[in-house]
Image (cartoon, rainbow, N blue to C red; front, side):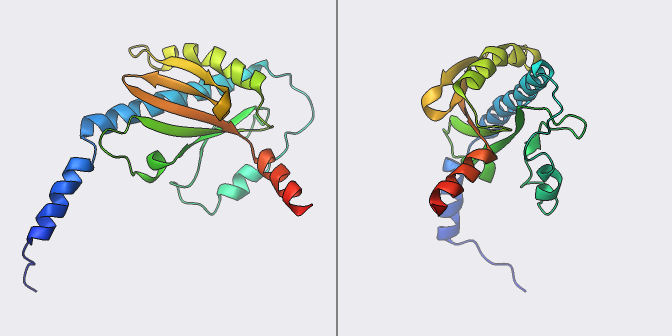
Length: 186
């Protein structure tokens, strides 16, 4: 089969793609701040789990983590903070969402989003505690970078900013979805 010749439309599409697609340095910078934020949130989750009193009551939704991720591909699974031996965690995991999750970042994108899954309904006091612990955890994970962490109560989350990039971290829980379904059924 003869090789297809490149038309002017093909060249135009490729030129436009190279204009809007982020450069490798931009992608690496975004990946770095997201990775640092994820690892720092893992450390904060560890600290909160150690500080939480160990009671004999099981955490709701504990058995769902294995069965709910069994049929999913690696790309669909969340980065989980929960370990089999430690079901006492307040922060269960973090997911990349939006353009970041789908790989649809454009040249000049400086804002990305993460969602933290909590065992219980997230509260303002939990958010304040995470904002208090996160800067120290970020210093442990990325001692060569400086990030600022600010609370964003209106968005039920926090903002991590550094190197001209911003990560919006929002808190949610499966409990919130279950409460929403009960309200709709009434």
